[in-house]
Image (cartoon, rainbow, N blue to C red; front, side, top):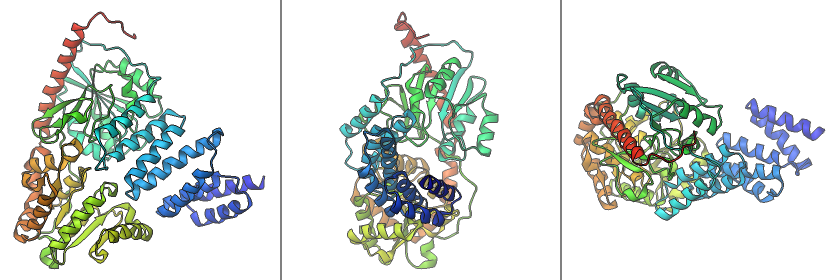
Length: 530
C-alpha cells in the first residue's frame, strides 16, 4: 500500500509540474521497489519535459532492456518507452535511431491510434535521411499497410450533386503552419460551385478554429470518433473529393482515408512526400517541386506555379539594413527543425564559414533550450571540425520571427528542406540558399525561391550551394536590397496570390472528379459495399 501511495504522490507532483518533489519520491521508490518499472518511465518523462534529453534517454534505454514483452502490461510499457526514445532521438537529430525506435514502438503497440502514430513518425523522420532509398521507403510503407489489414474500403461511388462536395481532413485546424498553407483553399473555393466540409480531429482549438468553423458549409468534429466511424460520416456526407492535409505528420487520420469514403482522395500541402498508401488517387504538387515521380504511389497533380499559398503572420518590423552592415560580419542562420540537419550539411556549412572570414552561424531549435542540448550538439560540431565559438545556439523564443533580424542569409537543409521556415525568412527579408535533388521533399526550396523570383539561389550541387552563399555574403548591397524588398516580392508572387491559385485548383478539382466519373461508368456493374 505504501508503494502505491508514493506512486500516486509522485504522479500528483508530476501533474502539478513540481518536478523536484516528484523526483525525490521517485528516487526513493526506485531504491525500495525497483520492480515497479513504471516509476522509471515517470522519471524519464520528467527529464524529457525539462529538456534533459540525454538523461531521459539513459533511463528509458535501461528500462526497455528490463521489460518482458511476453507480459501484456510490460509490453505496453515497452511500446511507450520505445516511442519516447524515438521522440528523444528526433529532438537530438539522431534520425536513423528515431526511425528505428518508432518502428519498434509500432510493432509493440496494440491500439491502432498508437500503432499508426508511431509508423507515421518513422516515415516522417525518414525524410531527413540522405541515403534513404526507394526500397527503404517502400519497406516502411509495406509495414504501415500491414497494419491496415482489418480495414475494408468502401466500393467506389459517384454522386450527382449540384455542387462539388470537398472535404478537408486534418488535425491542424488551428493556428498551425498547415492552415497558413491551405487556408486560401478552405475559405476561397467558390461557393457557387463547391460545398466545403471540414473533418477536424484536432484537440487544440483557437480563434482560427472558430473562424474556419463559421466559414465552411459543414464542420464535423471527429476527434473522439474511431477511424471507421469517421469514415462512415464522410461516406454519409457523400463527399466527392476528400483532401487530406496531414500525410504522415502528427495527429493525422490516414486510417480514415484508408476506408476510401470519398469518390476521389487527394493528399498534399501538409506533408512533403508520398503517403505510400493505395487509398490516395492524387498528390498535389507543382511543376518545380515534382522531380522524380517514381517516389510516389499517387498520381501527381502539377500546379503551374506553386502547390500552396502562404497566409502570412503579422508584419513584424524588419530592420532597414542586414545585420552585417551594423555588426561588421555576416551571420548565416538555420531555424529549421534540427532533425533535418545532417552531418553532411553541417560539413557544407563549415566550408561556407571557412570561406567567409569572421562569419557566424546561428542555429535555432528547442534542443538548444538547455545547456545539455547545447553541449550535445556542440560536441557533434567539434567532431566535424567546427570552431564552436563561431556558432550561436538559440532555443525556443516567442520572438521567433524577430530573430531573423539577426540573420543575413538563411541556409536551407537537405534532403529535408524547409517549408514554413523558408517562407518566414522571406517574410523577414532574409534570402535563403537551397540545395535540391530528385526527391519531392528536397525541392521545396527550389519551388519557393522560383516563385518568389530568386531561382538562382536554388542549386543542384554542393559546390554551387557554397558559392551562392559566399557570393551573397560578399555583397552587402544586394543583401540590403533584399532585406528591403523581399517581403514585397513575396506579396506580389504566386506564393501569396490566393485568388489565382484557388481558381486554378477549382479547375483541377472539377477535372479529376470528371475523370473519376468517366472511369466509374466504364467499370460500372461491380458490386458495392452499400
